[in-house]
Length: 315
Image (cartoon, rainbow, N blue to C red; front, side, top):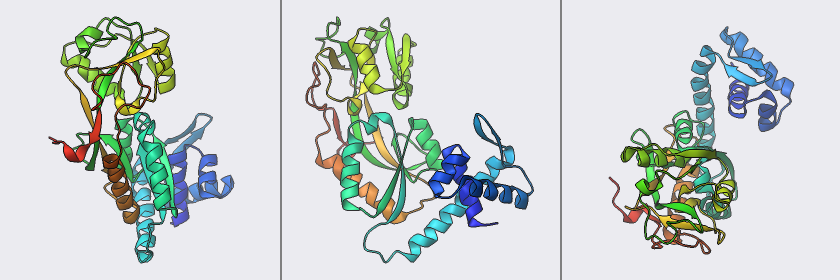
């Protein structure tokens, strides 16, 4: 079998289509189709079903995919070893990130990282925490921002931030020093869709409750706009909050609830130099900047809301 066949197979899976794979590889769609057909012929099994909804892997396809990714990984590692004498990292690094992390820290991190390593190609994939962990285990990304604990992954502590109840400006709890989960039990909750949802649900279940979810909202700007209009309340970590309008109040949960963020590393790293550069840049940025709530976020408690993990005890 050919390396190009494995590349086409992995690209189709990662992009979800033959068209996307062709665009990612810089070849024609017919070349991708020919490569997949050749791989299936050589292996003697069908790897995927293709219809109007997209592609679906067969059982054989799922099993072959792991090995195809390993082939691509080792080929990239060979190129990295051959070019290891280069003074700066080059090639490509694939980063998995969540929406809450992407709001504030990711833009600054990308500015810093691109400035230091202009030769590196950066590929971003956004998803919830569980999916990022799956991407890391399946070698679909090289590094990912995850919440701790992740006992089956290699991680480097990065930051911890605090969770807040975000309320309409005229809410009865707007002036409270802190909001207990029990006080939100009867409130219509606008659930942030994604990595924060599991944490919020676990907070309610810890006190024997299920949240009264009125809507699940994926976009954070939409979520905050709905709270401002009085459709309910929500719970968000401080890193997910951009400067908010006067129509909102952010009050810390009581007792304080913090989530711990870390950089997860794929078990099979494609580009050692790039991953090392990313980890060192991200940790330096986390420690050198103030990641408390941004200016314009009103009605908050103490501003000690986000801090480098290097200065706190991690259980």
